[in-house]
Amino acid sequence: MLLAKYFEKRRKAVNKALDKYLAPEDTKPTSLHKSMRHTIFAGGKRLRPLLFIATYEMLRGRKDLRAVRKILPVAAALEMVHSASLIHDDLPFIDNADQRRGEISNHKKFGNAIAILAGDALITKSFETILKISNKDKALKCLQLLIQACSTRGMLGGQVIEITAFQKKRVKLHMLRDIHLKKTGALLKASIQMASVLMESDKQIYNALGDFALNIGLAYQVIDDILDEVGADEILDKPSGEDLRNRKVTYPVLLGVEESKSQAIKLLKDAKNVIKYMPNNEVLIEFVDSIRDRIP
Image 1 (cartoon, one colour):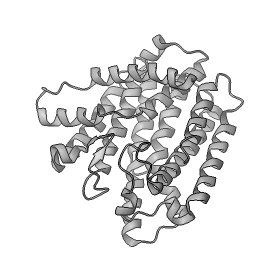
Image 2 (spheres, rainbow, N blue to C red):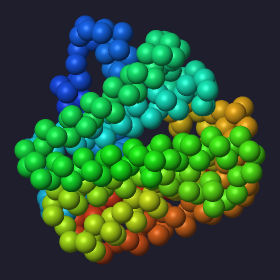
Image 3 (tube, rainbow, N blue to C red):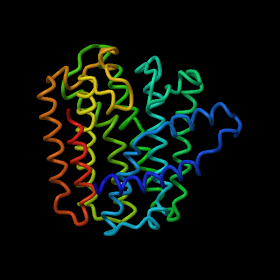
């Protein structure tokens, strides 16, 4: 399978970059650096950095690991932000998760205070890391996209909407969609559009790739909701049933499992249509198909 072999080589490169840019565990304060590295290296698919790299190579027109090494600071920064969001999501006063990526969750191992600070530290480290790109104008544009994805217009805003809406127990479908577009879609959109920035794509391609990212991001979250509902622990990065335990409103809750599957399939079809005429798109096309294959 093209995708598995392609991603495995680039996943190894991303992991090496993360190890390079993150301080060693024995760096003071040691508890903080151990906490940061715990979640980063607990596993994970590296979805965001891999999509960034795949899009960059598609736009570049050829696969070349030597060229990829030049953009690894961006890939590493994306994974740092994503891992920070997982640490914060798992906290007792948000999702209260005991496990993540097959390992004990960060706050369970290091305590709530260190976990919060580790998430904060990973976000600030991501900003520092992304500026290591040699072309400083492009680095600043990528940083701007990353900050926007993290901001109240993106992940932070989505988390607040989720918390307040669920507290009031008045979640409608359009609200749930907005939550997922911000919490999941914003960073995926930034990941893919950063590749467009580095390759200096025209505005039409830049915007189209943003639409592609939002469609796959929303589809991925709908499928995660379904997997949590049906108890597919082996596919999820954490034990299933947490949405039910936390009384979260999900797509299956609002639409039922079968209609949720239909929604996910349509989103993936729309994503495919965005890129189907772009040259060198075979990796991204196969990636969309791999998301489709997650539907139980």
